[in-house]
Image (cartoon, rainbow, N blue to C red; front, side, top):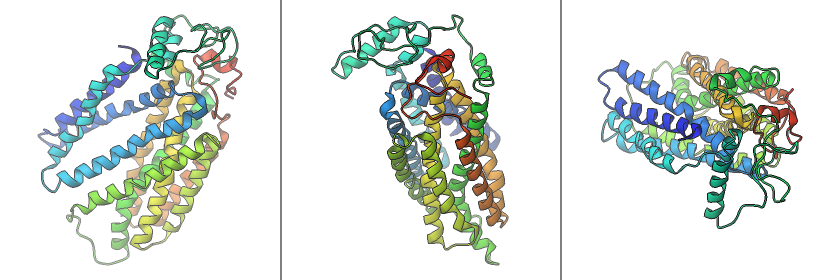
Length: 408
């Protein structure tokens, strides 16, 4: 099995095993450890983005990546529905066990997943890449364009497919390292002069984006109770818990669908950077009234709107990051940025949610607004746009290709 599929297999296996075993946890410590391992398995999800992206043509790559991302929202909605059904009848152990089933299904379908032809070409495995492309063409009841498949292109362009006989179907830069690079060397390349500025900017963008997104998700449940507590001398009982918690998550998760639709309409028309900027501005507008106490209805409406556009920026960032890096380090670059974003998601409950529960709602909202402004500035500083650009196969291809602007 190839490296790309091995990464997906490893992540799915860890998620399934740890997720299932957590249902049998004998104590709280073991539950935390096993859920942490399940989260580590889920951390490999960025590999799916890089893998799927390398099969989609650039003209509508953004749209199809957004469509691909909608399954995240469907998963959130399904999990909330599962909790809504299971928890009032059974226990949390059943919820965890049933939640591990999708990871097991993924293990079955990995067998049918083809390796990326781009990746195979960068490794010089031309025959294997050609066989995969031929199978894809047969499945779509068509034939491959005429020409030769090569990993040693004769021109400067990094093209995915060509209809002419003189141009190869898939090409990479003429200079290609013959020694297979390890994951660690790919990580070090993120800090090379060619990628350093973009890498740092992406990290800040992912941190701010994750902090804001998870802040909105968590505040949807925290603000309502906190406003009641902070505006009244009567404290709400912390032990009151019923199906309304799951119903609330179920309903608010649907707010992400319009955001995904908006992202799909914008991303290939106005570009990645402008799309994220526009959607961040709307997030800022929806959050601004929450610096003061609002009614529960208005609170829910404002947070739903903020979550809608925040999800759009989150998904476009997940499209943008893999497009920036060449195939030889695409998954590493996007994965590290994704990991930095997860740090933002971990810090958020300690800071933003902590402020709300301490009756400092205004400070929490101002903090989110400040991170939105910082994220927009970072987006504007990223030195190039990837809309309509061909993916680059090798590190040398970034500087050799005329289809992609050089990283400053």
